[in-house]
Image (cartoon, rainbow, N blue to C red; front, top):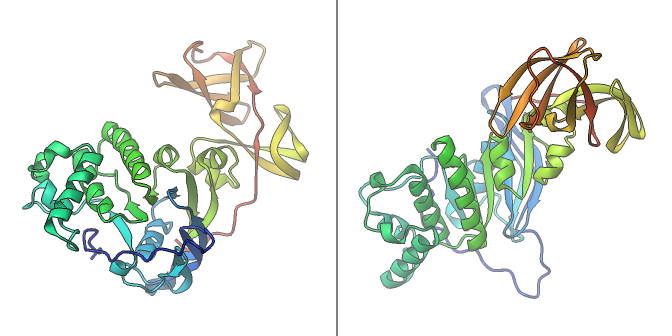
Amino acid sequence: MLYSPITETRPLPKASAAEPAGPLLSVTGLGKRFASGGTIAADALAFTLQDGEMLALLGPSGCGKTTCLRMLGGFEAPDAGQILLHGRDITHSAPEDRGIGFVFQDYALFPHLNVLENVKFGLRRGSRANAERRAREMLELVGLGAFGSRRPHELSGGQQQRVALARTLAIAPPLVLLDEPFSNLDAAMRIETRQDVRNLLKAAGSAAILVTHDQEEAMAVADRIAVMKDGRLVQIGTPDHVYRNPVSEFVASFMGRSNIVEGVAEDRQVHTSFGTLDLSRPAQGSISLSLRPEQILLNADPASSAEIVAREFRGHDQLYWVQDGDRQLVVLSGTGVTFDLGTRVRLRICDCVAPLDPEQAPGCD
């Protein structure tokens, strides 16, 4: 059973003002193997998190991201590694002793309590008057100040999510863990709510770790993204850097559509069938490259062998599938110029491209 996010947590001791500033969270060599079949769920995970920073753990189902979150929250005991929060070792601390807030998929709101009472539930230290004042402050922060007397079933999914967040922020945690928090919302509500949650966390000054399998969600919300595969962290960086400079074909494909092509590199240039292109980082010899659909420009050219074989109108832009010999490329283009099916086109690369490292040996799922 998942530990309830609303259980009262004990405040985390503050670091001395004389102590040097360090990361809020430091994770080193964190590992977890499940007994059934010896499955490796997490393999030597290592990263840091700064105060107020939002990190997304991104990867496919079964990659270990939720297991990582559960170990950070104290719901799973790691087999190896260390977790430090403001320099304090919490690797084996109970969840309620970590000073961490939790927001999970089902929100865990009490149906028999109104919104205000739900937010007050974890505020059992101090006077009732202070608890009520704090709860009302949090409801105002999340834009639900007028909804205190309503029951959870009278709210929309997005409003319930904000109540769950208000309850978590009421205890002033330095770190909030969010496990697929938007998965129960429809597409339009997800877009609105994820920005609300980001803004609220930033306003409260809390750092956050978000688990998601949605790369668009990760790029929209997180300051940094940690991409996971087979229990391992394969790349971590800002959304822009990870998207434009993927280290492997897996990262390139998981972070959005990508065309994988071959070339021969010499330092910061690579020779390909498109001509000589600039590389985003040095490489040498035969390599694979990631070409994002928006990096390819199309121009009508009856003499070209490349042909439009499919297209997808998306309102603000269009996706084209271009057959070029024995390979097919995906190209993203604006709606200013439309190419009909069967149009012969010339392809030109308009940006530097990312070299890919050979795929790492796969671990257990």
